[in-house]
Image 1: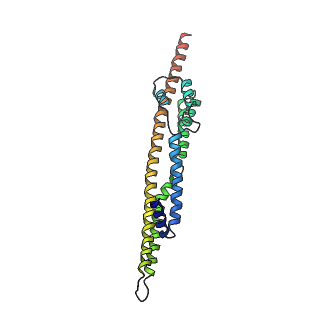
Image 2: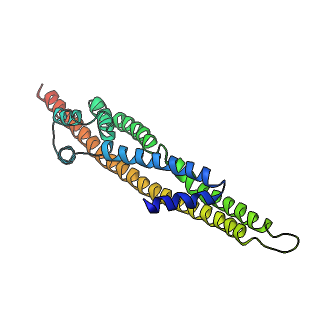
Image 3: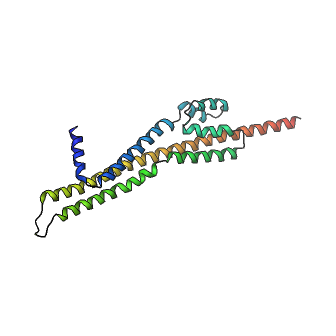
Length: 221
């Protein structure tokens, strides 16, 4: 509690630049919590569904039943649903529709990422602006008689340092968060591409089997 009170007291000496920096900090916190919740709850694929897709031969009805158990907002359910709905169509058609859905999923996962990237750049600049304002305040205290108010100068320097430190701290947190979620997004899309290829291959095998069967029926007749 004492450390928190000391931090709040220190922020009061940060000058006007502290207020937009605190706004950016709150905004970044909301975005990070939201994206962490989304990736934790909606960007996960159960091991049994993964094992089934990786199987050489499986029934489409069995996959549909397992996919139906996933949350409606689950990204893998959205992706698999497009393939399941069109698995009786030509493979090139299914591949095109799956690619479109993957792009839409990528856009939804990237929501808010640009804000984190902007804060990474904007926070240090606001801190630098606070630094300049604080140093100007300190320099103005040097009068024509060249007498200096030590307390005032110290306050100006404190304002400069607090704004700079706060801006850098916010930028570092946002940078780590942006890189982490970008990695999570890339991994999820890679998994979709790999598993989508498995399903498309399964469709091609089904279609080849149907062609062979039709050829055999034609030759028998």
